[in-house]
Image 1 (tube, helix red, strand yellow):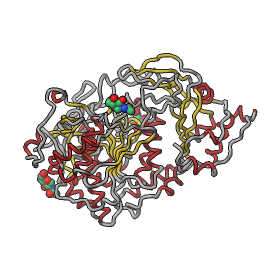
Image 2 (cartoon, helix red, strand yellow):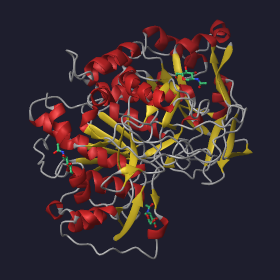
Image 3 (cartoon, rainbow, N blue to C red):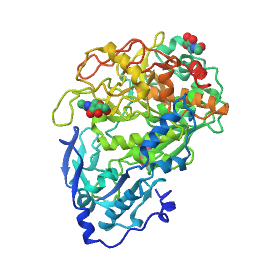
Length: 589
Ligand SMILES: *[C@@H]1O[C@H](CO)[C@@H](O)[C@H](O)[C@H]1NC(C)=O
Ligand SMILES: *[C@@H]1O[C@H](CO)[C@@H](O)[C@H](O)[C@H]1NC(C)=O
Ligand SMILES: *[C@@H]1O[C@H](CO)[C@@H](O)[C@H](O)[C@H]1NC(C)=O
């Protein structure tokens, strides 16, 4: 992780080597930053870690002009605004997210007081607002008034070293957004990968007859292939033209490896013209690429992004942070912070894929608010750079399990998903069936408790809420960011895994499918000399006619029937499923 650190050493103000006794008082007045009322559900205390265990501490400094970045994002994404489509370069975006010199000075003085030097920083983002500095558990505990413990996740048996609370010197609350790893327990293993193998197809029913013949639409009711999706979403007749500049990216985590041999088998069966072509894999933060270990999620993602967008180049990002890790071994890092590491990597690049899809998420309430806001702002930065960021909306309807809150009150509330609940991403829900397409019953949807309703969706959401009346009153926050924004097919996708065909479902299928359609729209614009679409939500809420409205089905959960799909936007299928031809007319303006 040395890429931009090297550039920055020269520019950064030097840190003092000697602790200053007066400064010590300045940094000892600790005020709580974030705490949990209880050990996050699913985790259990194991024991105290070795005090010498190394944590790769990520510090997010307050971005001095973040409000200007967000207002720029809204202007650049508003089709009626003069700035529409005028995305920012890396240098322009970095200038907006750079910390105020006072913030940089204060943080460096704090680090210096604890004995760190500039050389100890192993990563500094382009704007200088993110730094990574390794430190021992005992150093982190002293600096953050924290108590790190080793915790184990009961289901996945992954281990993390985390604290139930952390503090910062009073003065630094104005200068630091978040420090990690601290209270975010969500790890690679416990993050919900929103895919599942449909049980009736795993094992005995594997091994479909693969035929290169065009799939007759009637078979699409039981088995989805790229040909089905192209017909459903009207992309069949479109030939990509801008393949020299347009790129579709897939963010992968959880040691999910996209398999190149399986893609060839998939191409042979369903897209013969693509045989012999492949995708690029970029590994981030020691991510792997084990071609003997094909991932269900990874193969689903790459086979359907390729299936929809071929011959558009695709990039699969494999981000590491690999559990299980032994907290007392010499393994020097505890890096289960996947979004942060991937985002900091991709934002450090001069060019970024114009469309990126991600099929992973967490319950919003398990992500500390400061962490969620910081990550959400990084998605805004991707938008301002011209990238459309798509996320699966989740596979648990309005919430899975008992839906109890983790604030110590054990209240039942609908449980929104993050990052789908971030207003700067496009969240994709699920449908099933053809003629008509209806909402699938697991389609994640609802209202954020962290992020307010953004202007672009106020009208659509209010209209839904009026129809809803008092139903589920108190179970969700009607002034929160509502999702999903759109939807696509989510069941019975044929995926090749280890040479054999399986049926796979989940909103994990919907997001890559939609990303494929958006990527073709980006191709269309780029080949016409226009900009990429970037953050697409303001455009699509202003043009709901670009989508097939889904008007039946619901997303039960938390012991309720869940929300119902109906005419107009709803928190089950959003605006509906994409109609490429209608969207093409909309985005050509
Ligand atoms: C790759 O995956 C295979 C199959 O799971 C496993 O046996 C092998 O050890 C893995 N290789 C590495 C280098 O992790
Ligand atoms: C509801 O959402 C708003 C906007 O995000 C937030 O300010 C408020 O705290 C939330 N209320 C509850 C009870 O979660
Ligand atoms: C897209 O295809 C559907 C049939 O799958 C059709 O009903 C619809 O009119 C098409 N849209 C356009 C703009 O042609």
